[in-house]
Amino acid sequence: MYANKENAWKDYTDDRYYGARRFKIYWQRMMQDRGIRYYLFGMLVILLAAGSKLYQMQITQQEEMGLLGPPKKKYRSRLTVVLDVDETLVSYGDKAFRLKAGLVARPYLAELLDYLSSIDAEVVLWSACTTRYMTQVLSVIDPDGVRISQFIVKDSSWFSSDNYYEKNILWLKRPLENTLIVENRALSVRGCNANAILVDDFIRGEYVDTGRDQPAGDHALRTLKEIIMDLEKSGQSVPEYLADVKHRHKDIKEIPCHLAIRQLPEEIARGVFYFIGEKYKPSKYTGPVMK
Image (cartoon, rainbow, N blue to C red):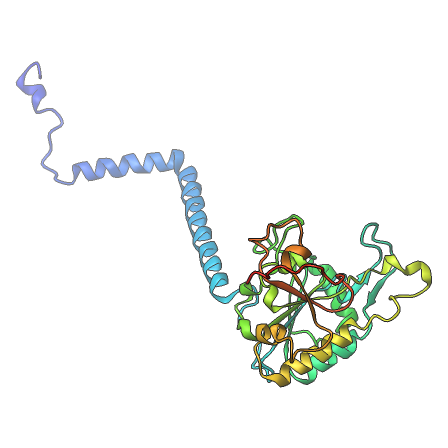
């Protein structure tokens, strides 16, 4: 390999740490040239790993605690009442053109919320709206912050960004037997229809030309208050009470799901929807109701 013996022993040393020192010198030179890039790259990797871990922890926590998280306090009432906002509790102009007619509360809304406050029930507002809009609604219907317990707004964790979004009370992680949801849109509660009551649409733009802020004879929320009073006293679970034709409130009606939501096949829309008011005309359907 070497031309002679002298070259064979050239640069030989007895220092056992010679290689380590050479590597140290090499590393120092490399860091001077590329150190800042390696440092930034390493920090980026660490931040991405930490962010991924934090996201996984948030997803796991949400799956365990639900959209609401733990109750804010121990409520006297066993009931959790979930209320839709737009076209159920309030109306803000025409639903197509959003007329700047101002926010109008549905008749007897204050009466309903005051009753729920008196029994100390957990009251949740659930709407596909922004936090800003929800704040405006709360400033009108609950200015003192004592009627509403929590609220849920549009979020990627449940909102599907199309007309087929769903509000399923299973996602709230509250006892199903004590949870009631009130909606004006059957499609939204297709997955929890046994715990849902549908009400007529409250759209101000449809009758604003009459000089009134609400249709004549709109007693939906007063009827709802009476139903909750009856449910609270009965001791029955929400699904049992709504299905009990003999003992439930006289104004509760029902319609097979596949008739209320005709775009869904019968095997998907199972059971019935419960409703009050004139949302649906009496059905001529006489076939079996799937459960």
